[in-house]
Length: 161
Length: 93
Length: 131
Image (cartoon, rainbow over all chains, first blue to last red; front, side):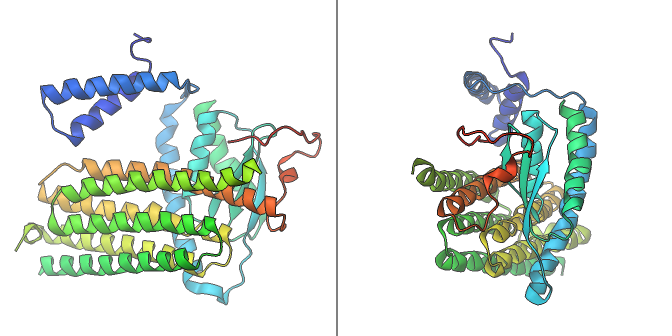
């Protein structure tokens, strides 16, 4: 089973996407199934590290937090852009020491940080675990460090490690 | 009445998205560095995809949504290739 | 005239609201690209359009076509997924490219690599690690 279908969930999702984008019929099922199995075996040939989900029950909580934060920072950044240069702003880099080491967890954190307007992931050093982010409106550096560490990193470590 | 409101909203959204593309295009031409230009190209791709989506809502045809899907995938690949190119030039030196 | 006539009032109003909201956010993001002074400030601007700008317009089309019941909303979900996954990757790569270019020029606008080392560890001379 595991040699024929190395990634059963990926295969199922690919097949579902194929069926949804074309039509539900026996022929499309066979064709999509062949493509999905081939693609998942190609994925296995790339030898990615297997993502592990320890506590998937916490995923909806993470999704809720991220949606709310993105909405809030959308409003913040929109007001910064519209106000223009009337208010003094100090953009800058913040270095954050991370304890999270799981690759999937880091990838999710990178997506969260970058897709939130106002913060951008710049660089990460895997040997020391120091993350460099750029913040559009840097008022208090310690506040951003504690935001990333407590709001996201703790939850991600619970989910992935 | 409701259709009129919706048509006005679609027209307003299309105007705003076209203006967004214009802003990005201006920065694409002016942009001091190559990385600014690639960033603007990416923003233009997203605005164009949203513009195609509004056309899809206006006409109700599903072909526009497939076109938007293709635009988003191609835009991603081209931006990645360009960003990788910018990095490669420096790494080799 | 066309399919939009058949839309109930509440759905039409919601669709109109989300359309204008999404397009407005995208426009504000583009204005940000135009107005910000440095590259690292400009990196923040397009995320307005790709997070809630795209989200609101996809929501509008979901509401519109669900209320009409004319077709499945698969494409909206797929487009939303692609945009949320691909945009951070593009922006991260661009930010890394920009920081490499600035460092090789040595203008000193960006923090040096030594910032990424903990003070009690010796700086290694190996090739820069990739994320």
